[in-house]
Image (cartoon, rainbow, N blue to C red; front, side, top):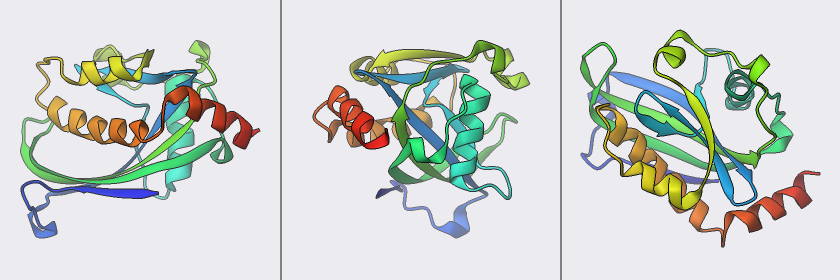
Length: 184
């Protein structure tokens, strides 16, 4: 698994007010990926790793909460690990802090959405959380759209690295076919 470090402003760990560990997943369906729209940003499904959880446990929990579908660790493969130093990050509490977010990205085969089993947080409901299957070019174009959310630029930068990793594969359909042969 490739590790990418984004630290364009050369922050040191002493400069960081918040350290976070997250997981996200690229779920593939033919030549499309599942994305979430949430609070004016586009994200891949996933979220924070809770205390005492492994990254594998966290992505399984997040997928169950967001899609209603139960995945297992064997159905997901590691894609990349991103360490992202985020200077002057505007929090939801109107503070500005320096963050270091470590995110493990997975990829797997999209298996649908079970609307009856989805468990949205209050913030997700309030911020109109929704899921869409879109192609990679559309994902890339959505990254460049304007938003009133001041945190969007940080999520967009993260998504750009994921797109680079995915483009190393000839196309998502080939990756999807490869996964079907390897995961069954």
